[in-house]
Image (cartoon, rainbow, N blue to C red; front, side, top):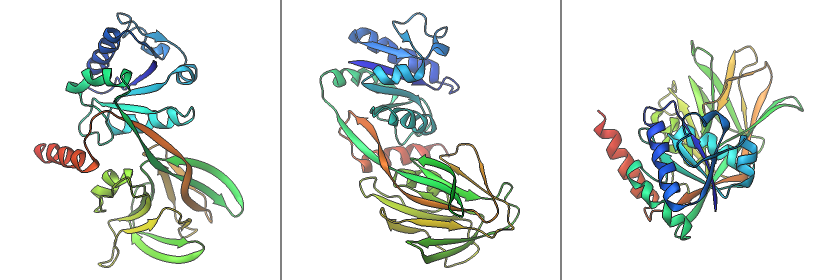
Length: 285
């Protein structure tokens, strides 16, 4: 079995946690690779170094070390090569991590085939100007529509299957997957959704109405998000680069035909992980 490792070395614990992962893989006598930019930092390990695409092409499993943002970015990399991902927490909460730092020794279970995989749905977000497709993105967590500076409220109209669904006057709108229900949507007052229940959720950001509430829709919904043509509006997927929505353009959001695959070694359920992480979160205050 061949592993690829994508570490986030900007994290305070990122380097040390990655070093511990390498040490464990060295003990297990397996091959693993990182990108050439990591060579100086991990020259004392048995790692090989290859360009990212070549590394992902030959590996069986991608191990990513960091927080949820790192895991999401790595999952999108792995998606292109149909490879499963194991997230190891080097951040704070990391809802999507399969292992914590003190559990790195459990990597041996992968070699024993003592693990399972879990698929998570993605959203496909397309920017249209009339019939012209301007941009297309995938998101594992969410797509967020807002203003560059949030100076005033946005008038956001949502259609489902071509028919009016809801209108929000708010600072913005979060369109999320169940995975994203524990991310930005949670901070904005959205509900937590079990990832096993494929769905699309709308969560307004600071809505200017007592009756504007999150909306949970079935995963087959086809959504159109429109804002007034004279407004300055942006969107971003999974916290990535902001994209300006041209005047008169709109977003089309659907469930993607692709899904991300995650390695699960421990027997804990989604509720177990949720309770554990939220307890940690509470302890930070």
